[in-house]
Image 1 (cartoon, rainbow, N blue to C red):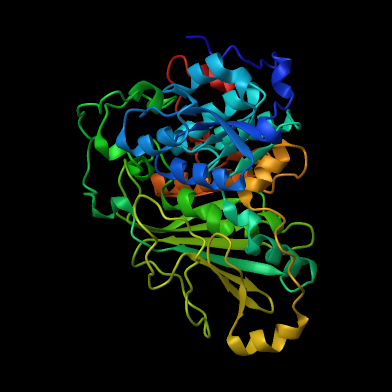
Image 2: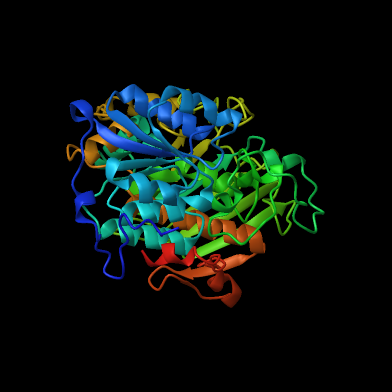
Amino acid sequence: MTMASAGLALGSGEVLNAQNLASKRGKNGKVKIAYIGIGNRGEQIIGDFARTGMVEVVALCDVDMGAKHTQKVIGMYPKAKQFRDFRQMFDKAGNEFDAVAIAVPDHSHFPISMLALASGKHVYVEKPLARTFYEAELLMQAALKRPNLATQVGNQGHSEANYFQFKAWMDAGIIKDVTAVSAHMNNVRRWHKWDTNIYKLPSGQQLPKDMDWDTWLGAVPYHEYNEKYHQGEWRCWYDFGMGALGDWGAHILDTVHEFLELGLPYEISLTHQEGHNDYFFPYSSTILFRFPARKGMPPVDITWYDGLDNLPPIPAGYGVSGLDPNIPTTNQGTAPAAKLNPGKIIYTKDLIFKGGSHGSTLSIIPEEKAKEMADKLPEVPKSPSNHFENFLLACQGVEKTRSPFEINGVLSQVFSLGVMAQRLNTQLFFDPRTKQITNNEFANSMLAGLPPRKGWDEFYKL
């Protein structure tokens, strides 16, 4: 198989097949799109794109094309070309679409996104952008070399009320001098019932019929198939996913990170952990991220709390923890109401704010202070487009994406550093200028992750 001869970019980052740079509009000016990952979360975002009325679906790709969970989407688009291997899709149909939407396990975001950019395609990819620090770095560089291509990471809150409120409140001086943030995600996770005395990876099982396991593994070292890696279970494992932090962090901390211009932390400390093991994420963890002063703004400490019984300190007057109605359902079911629903508490020198996840807005606490401030709060502009419309309009040159790789990629790197602290059960000192870990040579080598499998190293050169 060729490595998608439709558009290899070597060294300079220039796309060899220039025709892919031109936006190929579909019928009635619609964006021609290919979907990679069409079950579970993929099915949901395909529905979101369909509701815009702005897409023409050209191709469908999934390693599980014969499985029950992909049949619904296949039935919706019977004329779309079908592929199990995304590399074959780019080789055989790459000249028929101008955008891709990617909803696959975290470890596969990188090779598919890199090939799509090298092939001159606009890219929508679920969060987190990448699993390792280095992969996020390469994707940001690849996107910056191709400014005519739209990139969007799937943290939908960047197109909802919280995004516009946070910016408006910062511009008006309501949010200023932030010194600390508590981010919390204390819902049950898939791995919470697993045995932490694990001493080896799960034994191999019979592959599901027609599944392309080799392509599913991608650049990750070979693992025998086991159902504990499939259907969302991959999120539990260090080898494939990013745990609770990678799953929810972008929905909780995205606006804090972007608008406070936090960049990269200088210290990442694991301050609490229960259920540590070498293979899957802990039952609970507390991670401290320390960010330096920037542009006249004070240093910020962000503390991440996950686990059922690992709640952050709650300030007086906090009140009720609301559950954001915009949170999409998953194949785990709807997010249940908990003691403290996913969200954040933001501490400034003068005010305290509480907020949920995704697009939910901030409120000032306690309520008496909120009432006192009510007439000082600016009007918050409405979003001109939802996250999917924003991406498609950017493909057409009408808008700019709100969560492009160069913005979300840095946050993805923050999460990868947090996951390294979890995995090593340690404290890391990081130099944001050189992008190196200074107190742990082994951890520093982990920034790049393990070498890719034979044949997959090509994606790191695109």
